Length: 116
Figure (cartoon, rainbow, N blue to C red):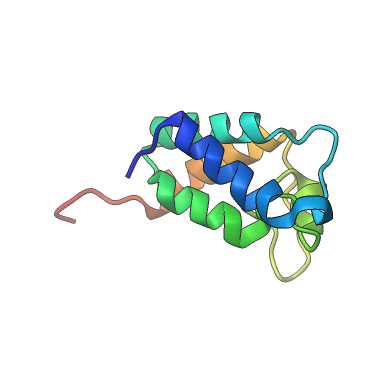
């Protein structure tokens, strides 16, 4: 399912800053609108269901601002792709790079064509 950019922005803002309020841990380079735009554009580019991407962003780290999302913040990796239980981390160059990494992974490993 695809959403409008405005809907993606509302979801990101609500489930990050809206949920955590003053308890949100917001780094200087974190920007809700930039993250929403990256999710929107990369979901379209890689044909990823936006509902799935948004839900995983909430569950993994509340888009990087949950007080407990230390690894997500340290690696700029809101979906924790490559951040595994063994302690290995996969740092991304930016929040948007982490979002694109997630969408590429989902397209390569989890998308299938109808009829397969």
